[in-house]
Length: 417
Ligand code: FES
Image (cartoon, rainbow, N blue to C red):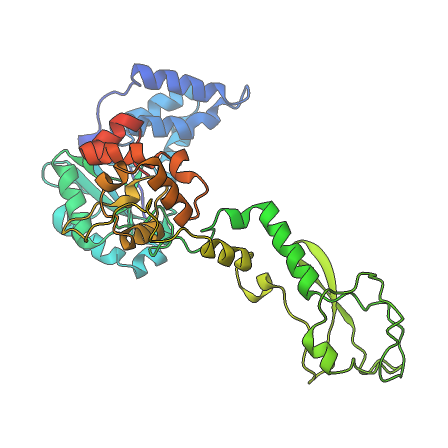
C-alpha cells in the first residue's frame, strides 16, 4: 500500500484554470452524464487537468470540484485513491512508468528500474536534477506478451533491454522522444510470435468455403456411417443387410474393419460398442468405440490429428508452384552486406521475407523493378492470389527505396506496417 498525499505546498501553484481546448472538452464530458449525475465527470476532468499540467495540483482538484458543485474532500478522495493521477510534479519531458507485475519482472523489469535509478533518480516519483525526467513502478499495463515494457505518456515501449531503455531515456531527455518508435523494440510484429506468424498463415485455408470443402472430403473418405441403430445380436457378425440409420455407405471402408470382424454384441451389452458423439466442424457425427484392447478402425479427421485443414489442397498448390527456371522469375542477387528490411512492405512478414531472400531478393530496389510478369510469378510462388497487386508492393518498395520510412510516410500518409 502506498500512501498518496498531495505534493508539498511549496510546489503547489497558486491557481488553476483549464485552457480553451480543455475547457471545451470538460464541458463535453459533463454533458455525457444524466442530469443530476454530472459529478461523475470528475474522473475524466482530473485526467484532463493532468494532461494539461503534467500532474494534478491541489488548485486543479478544487477548481474541478467547484465546476461539479461537490465538496473538495470528494475530489481529494478520488485524486488520492486512483494511482493514475500524479500528485507530484513529474518530468517535463518524460515520466517513465515501468511495469513491475510478474510477467515483466520475470523478463527483466528489475534491471529496467535500475536504469531509471541510475539515469533519473534513485527514488521513484522524484525528478532528475533538471526536472525533465521522472519514473515510477506501476502494475500491469496490458502488454505482457512483449514484456518487459514501460509506458511514457500514452505510448508503450516493449521487448526492452536495459540498453534500449537507456537509449530511449536519452532520446526523451534530449527532446527527441518523438523519434522513438513505440511498440516492440525488436523485430516483432505487434504481439505476434517473434519467429513470425504460426497460425492463419494461409488465408484460403481459413475461408468458410475451404473449411466446408475439407470437412466434406474428410467425412466422405474417413467417417463411417453411424451404427447407432444396429440391432443387438449374439451373431459373430451383424447382418450387413441391416442398415444403419445412415443410408449412405462409406466410400472406402476403413482397413481394420475389413480385416477384423465387428465385435459380437451380447444382450447384456458387455462388449457392445456404444456410439460416441463428437463435434466436427460444428456438426454432430457418431462413431463406434471398440471394446477395450481392440484396435480402433476409426480414423480421426485430419483436423483432429492436429494437421491443418486442407493439407491435400496445400500440397496440390505447392506442386502447382511456378518453376524456379521460369523466364519470369525475378532475377536474384548474391546477399549484399546490407540488406533491406522487406518486412516494411505491407504484406511481407518474416516467413515471406525468408522465402524472398532464398530467391535472391534482398532490396527494395529489386521489388520496385518487378514487371507485371515477374509480379505474377512471385504472387503464384507465394500462393498470394493477387495480394502483390492489391497491396501494391512496387509502389511501397519504390517509396522505401527512394527515401526510406520518411518517403513512405509522405507517399502513403502513414508509417509502414
Ligand atoms: S505484466 Fe507487464 S505489461 Fe502486463
